[in-house]
Image (cartoon, rainbow, N blue to C red; front, side, top):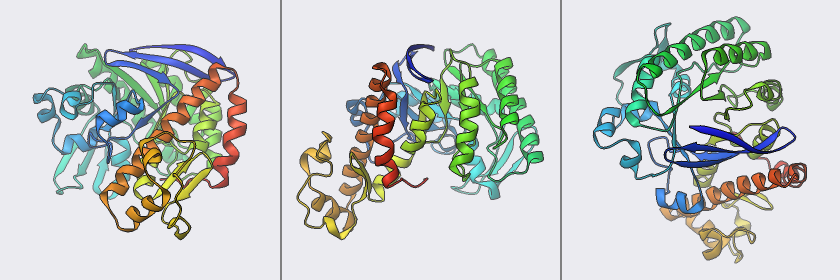
Length: 373
């Protein structure tokens, strides 16, 4: 994997990540395909929109259908018919979210499957082994994502564990002499000094990219922005910077303003299934009765398949009837909107008008701010 910066506008930057599966233009948004599929979408539709990378999850694919089956069938790209880059999350966040089903030790994490209750033990080495079998292009180290709020003593203890796991992941990764890229994850809760310590230790170990983890887990936005503003500009300039699990477009703008390159989140797809849609005028809830006889397109400024072919009245009708087509059309629109948003943001950086982009979009987004998902 190679990364190069094309242009800066302040701390905001556009760049290119080159992989053996294709090129990724940054800042980029990665649709979440947890089980190897972005809900309600085909891989071909995602590619036609312009998406260059998706995210899948190691924890879920390990449990079902199993990484060995996927490897036997030719790897994750072939299995899901996606011919472009894939990033796999190690599963640390999923293990965090299943706190009642897991037990953490220095060796790894013992957990019970949320599917059938079976017991599994995941070590740092095992997470790398699984991701190598999946043959994703960018793989993540195993980390502990701590909840908010967490006392400092717990954050310090967790950081020691996460750093040790990162080193073990890197050692195992290097033994395999593969062509994938390995990203380290900066933890440390809301404590900037612990985040700096984590960053220094990860740089000492050496990774192909660096991610900020453990944000957007319930903390106030002010706390998230404080960590982001402190740490993001200090992350290695020559490496991709990834803000994990953040997709609220207000947060995205603030993060890009601090030099972040990569994002993922379920917000556009989950909101679509719940009838919440993003438009050039702000977010709308298609279930509202005001749309029952609205013959206009969802967003007159949008060229997606949904907006070119269907009215707000029909989209509301589908949603109220719980038709499967509602999820399809809503998801097509939201993902198209996100891709175009990021494309326009990259263009604004290239043309030295990112400030103008912020001033245009922040009032629109804040007028009907999207909820955390």
